[in-house]
Length: 127
Image 1 (cartoon, one colour):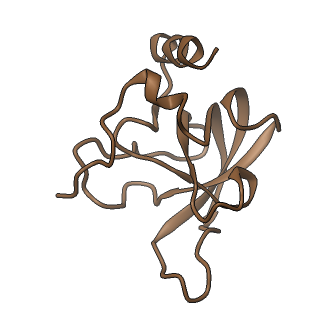
Image 2 (cartoon, helix red, strand yellow; image 1 turned 45 degrees about the vertical axis):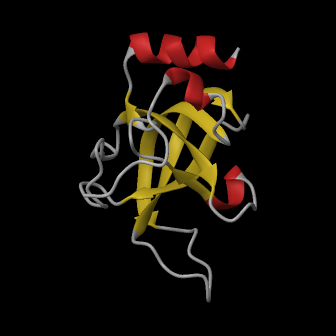
């Protein structure tokens, strides 16, 4: 079992490169692998964004995530998802190119199923 780089706290979302409330609209092959830099098995997940908390303003964004139901076993794994799943998503630019080019969702609680209480905590932490 792998461990998390940082323990989840709502305040930690404010330090992420991006954070949003979004609904999955499509799932395809991941987009952040680069030649000569190693590969990770991810899915490129496109979201209709309801609210940006950090790092963006577009109505739609594609972020790499662990494949639905897959990925490394962490203390808090990223949730499984399918088209129509609403998530709170946060993470970083994988290679420093920017969230719209190489955004990678974090697990360990930083990406989770949507619920009003947590969304309110994210809003308060990022205001």
